[in-house]
Length: 607
Image 1 (cartoon, rainbow, N blue to C red):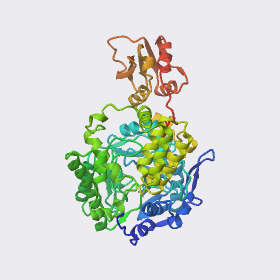
Image 2: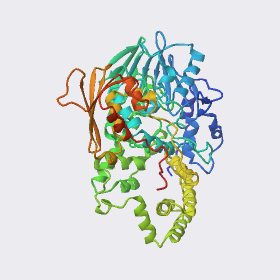
Image 3: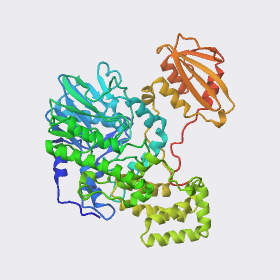
């Protein structure tokens, strides 16, 4: 391992700078008394690094575990360590502007209460979502309870709502199930278990909410004033999120970097799943930020980790982060154009020494290994060009053939144990995984694989890698756990446009069962003055809309006149709720009978 500068304590000094108060006890609970977030569980990090953790990740965890209210500069404060992300509060003329209200309403409310304890009961007069990931908007109702948002400006980058929905609703169940592994929230908080996610400690449970934006930021250079506070924006689409933005508070000389520059290497493709990010454009926007914002700031803060103070220090930080993403991109392209595949590039690539020794470029959250594979995927997709990989058997059938080729389960288990004893944990995991998929009732195989995953996890510098390995081991021993965060709750569903709502229904249609259906339904929404025509044909539900007064060329077999709240009620299984119909109302029942519910505990480490 590269010799790292453990003697450099600058990050610890910056992480403690501006501390005002901590939440004590640092435990946030829900209305039913259940624990939503527990930062006190990480008290063990005050000790020296044990053998069950990578020293570099242990150091990062010690930094991320710091929690409480911090002053960034006069008039700007942050809540840290009460969720995966930070909530920033900027004081205006009448109240306070909230930036990124955490993941859950409960943690956001606790953070706001801690701020008000020291800064007074200032009303929330504005809210800014830096980007479209759930830990930056999910707590919105914790700072703006229902009925209090009237007249409050809510700003977000153009495309925010579309991308927030596509990540958190369209693919929400699968992504959230995988997030259990990535953040390790089911693991015990201990030196042997979950110690960090690298970007923060872990995700909160609780209530995920979303108040739609009232003002889109559509271009770099757009300037807005909220509660007397001037803000200058830089759009950065396609970087850490499809819709994201940096912005400057010129009167505070403070720069918000959203999640584009944090104190770790970030993900080009997050292990929970997402759209592959563009490391080329990411580097471009970091470079643009250095030039565009000039000498207009003395401190930079982000939606995770701790700030960087001093103009020259911020420029050096941004420059190194720019070089990090540019280097990964360009070297991956150089090597793939020489014929190397993603896994081959991941084994060969090395960072320049200056970046390798920079704490903020370490792979605590993203890793060099999976990032270059993601860059390969962005350009060339899943297929590496080798025809042997074009039509392989699915995992169970492939596994059965591997195990048969090795002489059966007993021989496969023996060979895997031999590789593990020789220290080749990677290939031992491969063999054991094949055995588990070929023979899922083989308890010895599961226990042995779990032990290999423990060892791989304890040696990982990357937080999500550690959590994936250890959660996989836990599920092999205990079975699958359902997801705890509901991405289809009424608050989230209510934030969707009607088109998005109908899309979310379409992706849950059981196509094979609906193959032979041919039905058309018109939904006429009085409060939107729109007619939405739904067509179920060949197992696919499609929809289009037009003004309510515009008569369709062909009549539908059923027309439902209703309001949007009634539509939400129908989709929630509450019946027509007073909506009027023309035609056969049984068609709506038939349509809804094809809508499936996702499995919140689908298997990942077993077939």
